[in-house]
Length: 151
Image (cartoon, rainbow, N blue to C red; front, side, top):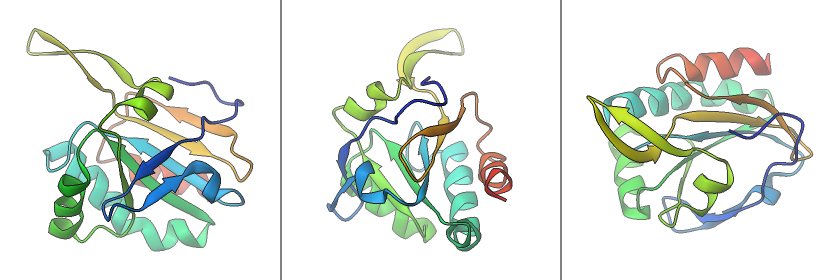
């Protein structure tokens, strides 16, 4: 996980519509950048729907939400449409940004060891500095926690 107080690595990734987003595009706004393992899984759906439900309040506080996983643009589009998600999902199939933000880790699940995305949320300020870094995120609680931090 990256430390608070450092400049967040810039990136260029396609969203669920194939449009390219760069972190630098959001200069002047706070960014909730969250990394999640997989579209349409239980925890990831709870987290995404929680962020979507709170999106108007988060926007009122001057922040945007960017969700990142290694799923494809097409997978993100289906996920967005199925749950009516109100924010941007970014596709990092090459794992470049996932690795730059240090969220590609060894995971143990039922005794099986594999590599995967560790659910992590970063809050980045208007100048691109990481002001909060949270790993071991509880999917259902994370959206409200981030809204509270912005308040």
